[in-house]
Image 1 (cartoon, rainbow, N blue to C red):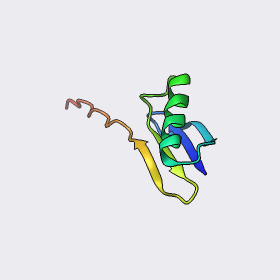
Image 2 (cartoon, one colour):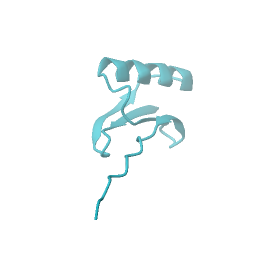
Image 3 (cartoon, rainbow, N blue to C red):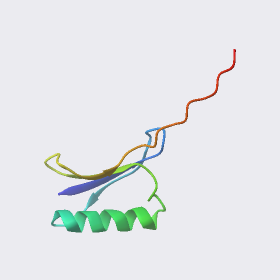
Image 4 (tube, helix red, strand yellow):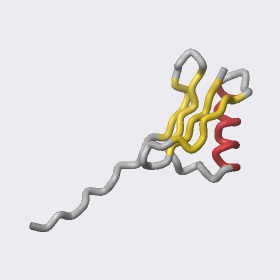
Length: 70
């Protein structure tokens, strides 16, 4: 009923797996455990319910503007 998706900073999927949790708190705990196991804790991710409801997410970090000289 819950799903974890992890992305790299360019938006490419690194992990896309269902979670076995029965409730929202369990999904968060299981999702965080998988993130730590694979060392993806700092990557953008989302945990969603099968209905499409967003349970938790970490967004992409903003990129710094490049200094352009003329």
